[in-house]
Image 1 (cartoon, rainbow, N blue to C red):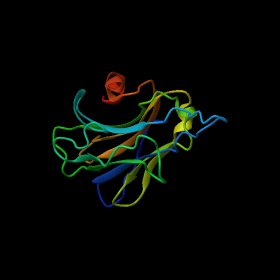
Image 2: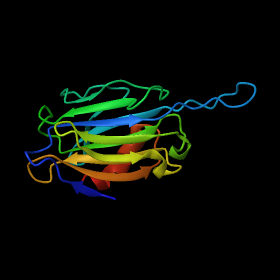
Image 3: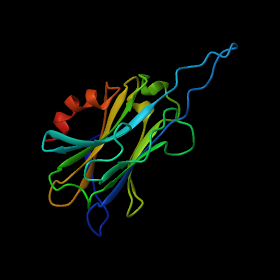
Image 4: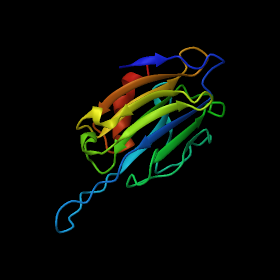
Length: 183
């Protein structure tokens, strides 16, 4: 399912948002037993070539250059719409960055097939166009997914959807699995 998507006709991508949403775990049983909370995490990992250089995620909300910002961690999925949002201002991005990879992981270890109404998406903020939208259940029992990447195949930024299920609960587990997407 990998493929570059065209961006708006009036120029390159400049401002992009990643959204992640899911519903909280339901309580079950007559005696109030409760399923383990579901804590998904959105992350944007920045690379210079194949070298990991920066990230915005729940433990570091803003990249060093301020161009990538995670707007806050949801540990339960409460609320409608996007529970976690990452905004990327490509005009402020450090010039050495060649790729930004968007990932989702399940910090609490559930497979995506156990998560209700889970989705992630990337939107071009200038045009309002959704570049990719993925229902997380399509990743079945995996605990992570590589959604897609922003990169510069020429001079301008483009988005390529990847949609690759992976096994990862934290970004530390993800980085070694991204090498093929950085070339």
